[in-house]
Image (cartoon, rainbow, N blue to C red; front, top):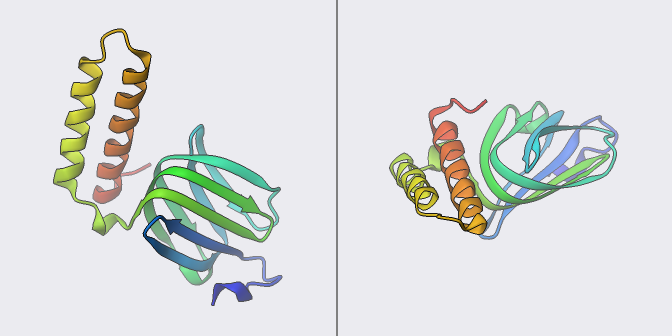
Length: 144
């Protein structure tokens, strides 16, 4: 299927979560939410291994067309002809339960308020709130 990209200038893209292969296609460009901010992979890019944050993976062109997926935590491997995304959580925007994400956001806010002097609790609360906020934005189509 996607393995036939060859020298067409298209990236072979695989998006995998622990329970399923969400995507195997080609794309002209892939935007990724790394832990330190968004990055874009193009055909011929230098090799890179990046930690994923929470946000949207956006694919442009190729057999994938223009698609978006919510991902949270994991890793992305960028090679000159291939991008492999291994995400702890990966969902299509229409698969996101907004009510559940709103509850996760509220739980994160409560954890932040209850963190006291514990930096690990603040880190957990911030990660929970970021994931929930990005999930809601992806479901609503308002993600940046």
